[in-house]
Length: 378
Image 1: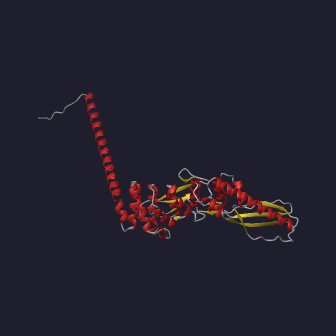
Image 2: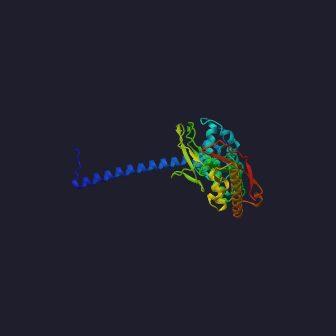
Image 3: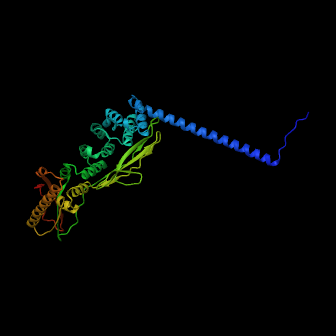
């Protein structure tokens, strides 16, 4: 018997072909969905396991494990571990870790913990912040500024390191909070000078104020086997990718650079310059509700003297010191009236250096030098 084949009409064949094609397409789509869902579930379960291990990793004796524990605590936003990370970092002595070279595990475990603490945004106890500040003042200032009213004393202590940008960040916060003793501290830090310019015409250019240039672009590489780690810098240079951490006379921003393990990278940290004398004057003006020129006149007035003889120069210097004394007392009254200076803090005198600038064409008769004098605030 010969086999028989079934022949369908052309219309029905087309329908069957379309049905088969749709079935194959639906099956492939279903398989793809299952693969994606399976991958997502596997990925989620892996993250869950990592998150659940963060606390145990922090307790490990291995510095690399501790770094991973801090990383997962931050990545999983386990805010309850912030206190444990801070306590563990303090136990490891940040002041000693900060002295290590950047290719050591100790260097990077500290950076991993600091990165986690900053990302977790939780308040830390004062002893932990103090310990961190001894090795990492920039990161410590970021953590302190998150809760500035509770950390006034720590921020004031942070300013004992003159020069770095964290000094500006702390000063901004203390000025904004009108912290007790801040105005008196600024007065004690200022360089008081009475500039006297002696010339043939009685005209001269003013001298400049003290400043400095800070910065550098270090090269670093996170060791293989460590997690990615963010390193931090404070800067007064604004940019869309930087977070402001301290608003004030000169706003300060946090710059975070994420470093991948095994990849050497030069950090984009350009140098920047600041006039510390100018900033102190500006903070006093803010605290006393007076203008900057008023404070400048009290701190470093300029006197121009037309040369005739030594007696006339001596009389001009006496007059200049008297004017500066009056300006200082006026500034002290403004600070006291604004509540920035306590009455007891007026019982002090400030050293003033006399700077005689000889710009005469004929200097055959030398001008005398004058020792520093002290001017009181009352």
